[in-house]
Length: 343
Image (cartoon, rainbow, N blue to C red):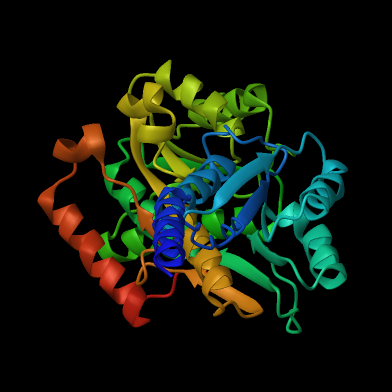
């Protein structure tokens, strides 16, 4: 009996020792969540156009930093690339695609209808009244800020002549030009002046050629314009170069703050009419992530800071306090709906 007891005790000790030496059971691990992937398809100006493609990409990068999404872009060299690039993102399993520019509207709508499980957001695009639930148009009331730019130009011109021109005659371009002229007219009405606007019917036919931007600027300067607002993406860089070579002339940039995007021309940039795609793109992405995304439209305005005038930078001291105060009053009037921007 004693031998059995000793053997049993010895056996229990061995069992305890083996259990102590055995590796601890691994805790069950959860599979990491798949990243939310967002792609950007550019317009033909390219990702580094120093204009609306670049500003939209800034919004994508902000979303990557703030929301933890994975972002990528595909550049469109020509309009036939739009559908090819959209298809590539869809085939690679992207959750959302942001497309940039009016010209890609039809392709964006077609893909949203074909792939309802993918979210799409299109900048400067309008799809009619019936919009698929997975599609959002990101619009901008650029007329509001362009009106203020026209008023400022009229208050700053030394020749009494200002100018503008467009890339292609499409609504996202002409909205700037029409409101700019309306701002000049409003200044004339308030001050009894007769500042003229040149170039309202001038379109160079593209968004790429800086040579065309230079020629348009040189023609406007020759006709007396000392402040020019090119609404043509990278084409405007040619305009900026011509202005830099003509002392006494100034530039008004569009889409982004040109003192940042084209800082080499900050010394001639009076201000810029900003489309805050860097604000609206992350907002649309966040909606897609949290389930609040709805088909329709999201508009950037002066009131929600979706559009604005850029700081005056190197010209800040040249603009009188009176003119700055008038601009503040105009901004309030546009937001309140008491001032008509002409668009």
